[in-house]
Length: 232
Image (cartoon, rainbow, N blue to C red; front, top):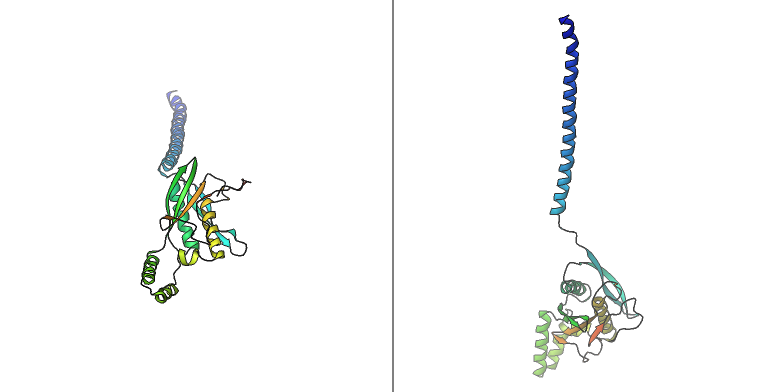
């Protein structure tokens, strides 16, 4: 009788053990899966915290000019970070314009002013150091009455200058005006931008003494949505 009871309880014990082991295994799997999912989520959250925020860029146009129609042309586009202050964005635009259209002659952003609720940029067109030395020597020769030497010195100049190249000629001066004004005012740009721009040459406001360029005074922006021309 006792042997029969022992034989009948052994399978029951084995079954209980397997159930216990199964519960442990299932629990381990569930806990492990939960830990894995939590770990993955924690890693992703940590990566999101450690990654720098994405920088937004805006595309601006550096304009050329058609010498036949004297109209602006889309030369090329440049992407500039929206996080930069306005003056820095303008300087990036100025540097690109200098490299692309004006023989790398310096174009400096003097500053940005607020006038009667309008944002006006001040842009300085500068000669290179080499050009400055050339003009100083030319003036010296003229003052000494050495006209032919002065003319010869100018003829030998092979490097671009504002005075002797980009400000000269009715067509050349008109193209210079178009490229500078349209690039800085971004007429076709729909976003918030400058209201106007003023140009300087070697730190002095550009005056009417230059016959072929039209950069005197404040040039105001006219957007694509504006039907009436802006005051000049």
